[in-house]
Length: 419
Ligand SMILES: Cc1ncc(COP(=O)(O)O)c(C=O)c1O
Image (tube, rainbow, N blue to C red; front, top):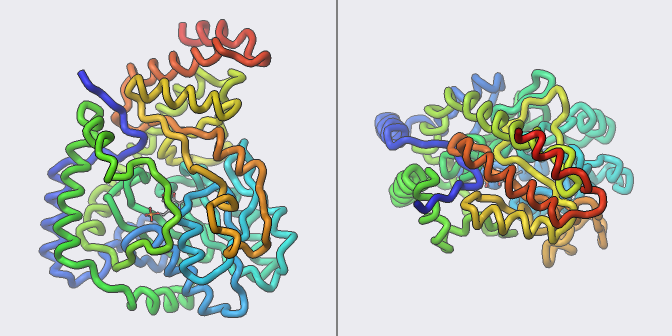
């Protein structure tokens, strides 16, 4: 039987889509966002919707720049989604990529010292894979420099660190509901803030968005049904065979579509919220089984969230010893029907043509560049079965056979752990 485990996903039933559709029709467009229930869960005063995470981030950056027009630099992790950089560029601002710590996937804030303080508009977190960043540190620096802190929780809905929910730690936060996020509704983004002045500026920006059209709603409905049908591993190979879906590709595109949140997405997001905690727990439990079995093997390292953090683990990140080990791992896993993916294709500073948007020219971030050559991800979502986990452990364990000197002895350990 053909079987391919998708790299990431949120199980979605046809009944969920129908429920959301019915709710959106009976709302008759009266509610702009339908996200109030999410705002209440996140315990925030203001919540606004947008068509995607990148659209949400773009609105945020424009609003912040309007409040502080003399500042135009955004500090962001050098290894993050290209759409973050695209939102900054589209907002007419300059990028200042920060070096990464591969052990935690958090950014190294010492890179802020090279910037003129009065130019820094905001610092962006990234919370990759739902590993919640050290926001207390970011907050202190933002406070000292008079910059805003934007908590980007695109991948971290439901994650927390020391009891604080990801996305709510800064002056303003954003979430994404795109494919592959903690709660996937095909599209959608949210902005949260507790600051009234900021909320006013954000609402002004949001009011300029065009509404999502009926045609768009119809297409979204088709996409949701297709997602629901094709996500289970017994059918996902069909989606994998459709290159126009651009699965697993990361593009730097400043012309991304922007409109208000479709109420179908809004209703679906709120409808799925009750399941989020359980889904994230399954992801974390699957990740722990793989990590425990393979931890300590020289060919691979597992970045770790902070001890007081509960991540979303939208995917399990793994760092290979070198690029060729990553290539072998990804090829072998995919041949075995496991949706392993090499993640972002480069660091932000190496996106072709990015130089003219950098606050400081010629900026290279060696650790971020290395991550882009060695990091890959494993699926851990609720469709991952015990047999998939065993296959992953077998394939990655066997990489040790073509091993580097530091791996000697690891294969024996692996057998012992599996037993
Ligand atoms: C860290 C991060 N920020 C922002 C975004 C943008 O979200 P969206 O795809 O909904 O535009 C993504 C999407 O992958 C992301 O991973």
